[in-house]
Each structure stands twice: as structure tokens, then as C-alpha cells.
Image 1 (cartoon, helix red, strand yellow):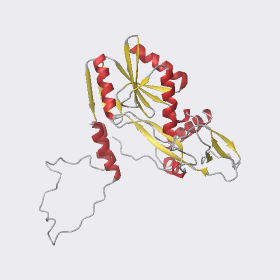
Image 2 (cartoon, rainbow, N blue to C red):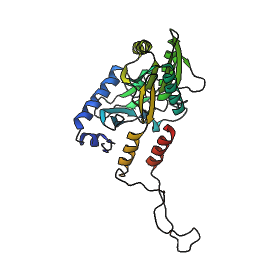
Image 3 (cartoon, rainbow, N blue to C red):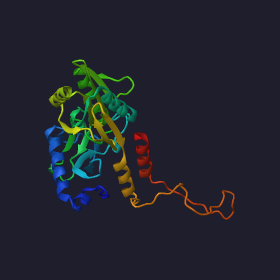
Image 4 (spheres, helix red, strand yellow):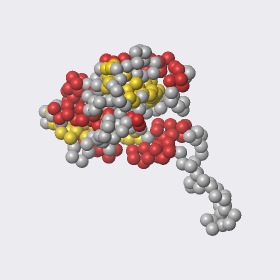
Length: 311
């Protein structure tokens, strides 16, 4: 298992052993932005607020923690946005963990296949809802002094998840899907007396349906979006999934737990029967008691929540 942290800057990416992969990922990202007509270059309007961008680098891993691909995102700094000026509503539903488990159980009950699908550059599919300007991205600046006027949503915008969700929701309804009243990340539909269930988590979707109906849904989605078929679902949201249609379903987080231990250098730690170390400890009223300040790493809290939520 590789515990190497992802780069936090272009300099770190270019200085990493896998720098060629990062350069390739950056060039692909910029090409995708241009191909999707994400912005147009214009002269800066007088008085316009111009936002800046940043690069985000992520090594995409499988359930065992092995690197499958390198992803680089050119994102806008949404922290520079102001409510009422360049964004309003931001809420976008995603399927809850209970919803994921429910759909997997329904698939098991009906003997359906479960296919994992990824929307490529999902956030670039929605038209922008307000006037937003951005400086040309570093390393891709043509030197003209012009700025980018966004035509489509961009990763990092506060309203980007909502724009994408509304875009996909509208299209799924056009295709005959209904949205669950209990979970805004679950959609369902019947075709040839057989159910089709979808779980939506941002740009990840699981299709639970017969083989024929999965092909139908993939064809419909490909008419509107660029999608990548990841095959039968095996890992999703830090969960390892073993599934045999109509026969067997198992969900675990062994790989995720291993990555947490690697992250905090505890991969070789030994188990203990209690969470408290051995030894005598002074009581709260003991005058000789030392004051100890414990700063809990926010990453630990987030990862613990991920374990709890998916368990």
C-alpha cells in the first residue's frame, strides 16, 4: 500500500517521481476545459470581480489502495465568491449511505446486475447561472491580459454541485426516471416489467438493473454526457463491495482502514484490549495532575466519520 501524499501545488507535482503522469493529467484537464467551451477570453469589464484558480492533484486508487490513474483539476477559488453577487443557492443532494445499502439489497432481491459509472468532467456540463470572471490559469495564460468569462460551471464554484445535479436531474426525468421522495440521490424506473435503480453521488453513479436495461441506460446517458463504464461495482465511497446477482452481497472497508493506518503511521501497531494506555493516572482533583492539551487532527475526525457512516 502506498502512503505517499498527493501534491498540493504544481511545483510538488513536477518534482514528484511520477511527474510525467501529472503533466499528462494537467494537459488533459486543460484540453477538456477547452473542448467543453468552459469559458471565453474577454477584456476585463470595468469594476468586475475577477477570481483566481488553483490546481488540485489526486491519485485515484482502487479498493486495495493501488493507484489506478492520476487526476489533475483546474479549479476556481470559490472562497473568493460573495453571496448575492456571484452565487445564490448551493445545495445539491447526494445518496446517503443507507440509500446505497438499500439499492444494493434491492439488487440482490431482484437478481440485478450492479454497474459503476463515472461522469467525465461532470461539473462542466451545466451552464453557468451568473456572470463570473476568472484569471487565465497559470501555465496556460496566453499573455494577452484577457480574463476568462465562464460559460459553464467549473470545479470549485460554490454552486457547481447544484448546477450539475439540476442538469442531470432534468435529463433523468426526461428519460422516464422518478426521483425518490426519501432520498434525492436515488432514481428508479421500470422497463419491460423489470426495475432500474440509480444511486447518484456527485459524479459517481451505480446502475442496478438487468444486463439489457443497463445497456439501455448507458446508451441514454452517452447521448447527453461523456461517461466511463467502470464495470461491475467493486468499490464505492471507501467501501469494498463483493456482489453476485441474486446470491451474495458483502460490504467491507478493509482497504480504507489500511490507508488510514498508513496515513497516521500506525500500520504496524498492536491491538490493545482497552483504549487507555497502561499505568496509573491522577484523578481530576489531584493537585499533582498535569494539564494536557490534545489537538485532534481534523483528518482523523473526518476519516472516523467515514468509517462510522459506511458501517
